[in-house]
Length: 273
Image (cartoon, rainbow, N blue to C red; front, side, top):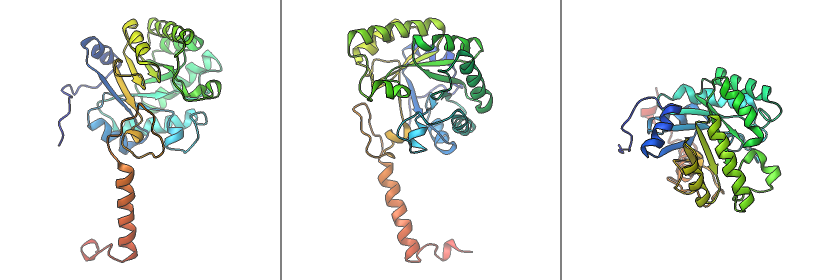
């Protein structure tokens, strides 16, 4: 069995994220959306598991993250929480669950925490959602912020390209990061931003930064588990490293099963009662 660089088996908490940044220990994160996968990811020693609204794409086959609902996110998060003993589990607040009003955002965050049992929520956006984030924090719910490419705003951006290349947008991102950090967010995800900017944000804020397409200068990294395991096809952004080719392995295994059924080789005498 492989040996991993995990020596601390305590339950990972939001304060542990802060502790890891202070010690200079990188934070490892992956997504999960179901009990079986989450159990495997947790046992491998991952620090954090995000129940991402990317479930809209990966699990439901939607073109973007917008259609997934609070009820669906609670279902996925509850399934993940049941499998996890060590990792910090945070759940994305989906599109429409916090943009309408501060009260609506607090109400939905409370629902997600109560009904899923997760440890924290993640919210996209900066100053424009700051008041809502403060309300959620005041309710005792830890929040991870998300800046840069925010997929829930895809119709506003018009593409999934790199964000904050221009000076004005870069300055806004730095301003937003400072506000979110001072408000009390326990972490900030930086998605598809220039590495130099990610490094600047990481130095600026006290809370950990988690990168996806932001270079190795952030305090941690996150990938979609189905992407890094090679289960998804046709999605190959520059930042993605595939650590396995499970799509091909599964395809071949299922093909072998079909052949064995068609030829009556399965089940054989030893597999029959």
